[in-house]
Length: 397
Image (cartoon, rainbow, N blue to C red; front, top):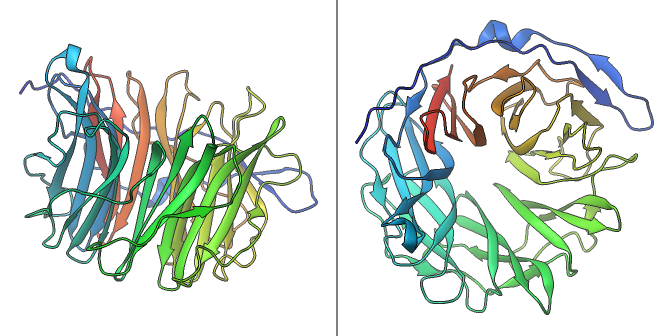
């Protein structure tokens, strides 16, 4: 393994105006500086440190443990094979163990997702080893010491893409895009109520085509799903909530969250107790690809106004809620280079703290993932500063 010439840069605070798009009002510019006064930063860690292509990392945490997964190139270039790798820290991110190959097959394994509840770790990804694309699943009941045999979540998954995962209590939820030339894009869903031992029947969410990028979050009462739907020249951000196992969802008519001419893009959803947070990056206009957020404090029944985070070319937004604090991370080239940014606020506030440039390096940083534990904010992203794609990690406390 090579030790990359990775230089840790001093975090700089990017002065970005944040503003609120209140229902029925004009944009009102507001700035806050609180985040710079409350965060301390650990050094960036290169978790992969190899010459392979390590991409699309995701992170989760439980108690003092931190778990990271990613997809990595294996074999020679001609094989174009990727596997899913797992790594864990037992000390809150201070040190990490060796990587473990979870998929370890001749096919292409991609887009891994992870969720953890207590000692249980749940991981899903898409794989084509059988000759057809399938949603695969593996579980660890002992905080990553051992993993179950990989299982297929559902038969006839119709060319799955973009699988997403959430878990709460004994429930594990998986949602993905089903695509073929006959049905176009559909949002499909499956659920386990026995800690991932078995999964129920395949269900369709939304019941329409041209629907992409589904995301899912879970709380004690059920789950929330968001996704995009292309309508003529506009993209809608759609939202439903589900609470009963015998029904795919409770909202018979998905709600559109982006209003007042605000275009949609790939979204993200988070949940904590009775609170829900939806974030997305706009597709239009090209020179103002902002980050938007909407939050609910009554189990997704009603949402407040849309909050705009000024940005240049935002993408790959991630979010979390812990207690009454919102965390939003995304990728942007505000400084002329693709970096990872983070901002926070209280759920009932109408503006966000000014974003921090978390990666702040010379390479392209993309695809962030975030989790919050009792000892800090943990973030991973894909970065090519060393000359190849590596998985980098940073803790903010």
